[in-house]
Amino acid sequence: MTHPDTIATTKDKLTWYHWNHINTTYYNDTMKGQGVDPACPGCTDMFTHRAFGAQVSATGLSGGGLTLSGTGLSSVDVQITQLTMVVDDPSTWLSEVAKVTPAPSTASADALGKETATSWSEISERSYIELSGSGANAATAKKITDHVNWDRYLSLIQGRVAFAPIKFNGRKRIRHHFALVHFLDLSRFLSSCAEAFNCNDTGKGWDMRGWGADYWWQNERQPYYNVLAQGDLDTMRSFLDFVSLPSLHGLS
Image (cartoon, rainbow, N blue to C red; front, side):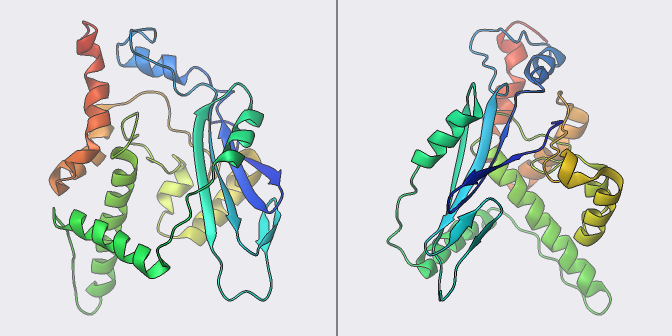
């Protein structure tokens, strides 16, 4: 993407979105790069004019834009609404996200936490890696374990319910030189990025999303090798559907 996300002004809510209206050739370029006619039967351009974003609200908090605040609160119930849709104008997305009301949960925070823990426990029963070390090696062992879990988390949230394969160069994160080089040092990344690219103003920071158009197996294999080794086969469907397109349309 060559343009940043938009922060909308909404009363007592934090709202931001991205609308793909400038780079409108990625779908055609990607399909052609994979040897598939973009107009093939059953093929739909889901990228052009695609709007995605989120809206945050919280009981007892007011404001908007970049900040919500409140006083005299001992607890806050935060609701985050996410919406993705293809629209001719972002105002349509704004009106639709305002209509989406998260279903109120009758479960306590503790109960929801236990439900999440149970879900991840079931995933870890497939496989897990946990390194340990002593002395100077302890920190390195923990770092490797944390990154294995982080990598797996990214693959799961992108591959389990998806319309397109996991994108290799950055996945959900940006493909940005400083993001890759300084991934382990957030403060260094932010200072370097701000100095070299003026991230917040030009969209070349957190919301750059400069993935490029094509999928290359040389790189695409990296997340999916991990997926297979970890036994997370439920992340494979979108990838298998995508790579089957050329054969379905008589191409190789």
